[in-house]
Image (tube, rainbow, N blue to C red; front, side, top):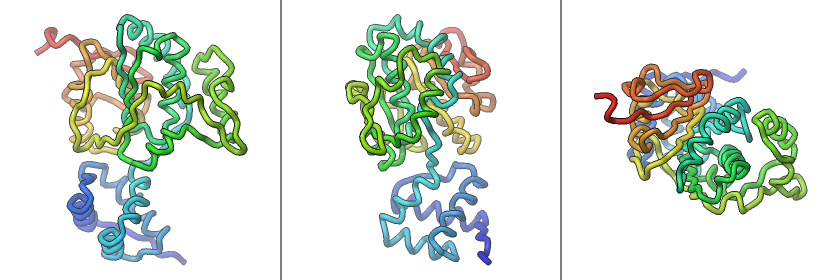
Length: 280
């Protein structure tokens, strides 16, 4: 019988301190319950009995740390995931974006890229992709490499096609990819104006001014203070009347910027930045 591994608060703090000092990744403001569960699962998978065993492996094996990262920075994604979110973007955000001569979009926590291609397809269908710059960022370098390749299992295409249709897609979804054995390769032209880059929402700063920021299924893993910090980062990164799209699992309710945004879609948590001059 496998013995359940339990990390107490002190074990977790010492482990996170060690990771920060050796690798520069700060996970101290992630939800403790989430971290304890994910790290315990990782230890069980790798037959590690104590936190000291894990710390020893991390101290002496960079590859081991690369394997731990996906356990913490979970990649739960699919193309046009939550189709009503994309339908709302089409109907409530795209018409505003169309008024800009140059559109900059930041997809934060882009994981393995399914969302990046979804957004690119949506922009293409509305004639905006050629005047867009997309910035796709994630903490996980391996995920970014997958995103850049644009190659996904063919078995996923049925679900992705259904999502695409429900999102309001206007073409045959198969027009955007080419089958290659058990995988499909998405049209490289979709990524002509896309920059893939590592970015850590915990420690890195604003790096541009955007008309739209999309960040879904990321904030839910952070504690309240870090959620607030990241929302402030997004606020600073948006142009006047820029859009912040978080999806239905997130909220601004407990952040100090909640009154600095206008709610565009209550269910899908899409907001527009208010004019700075309209509030203190």
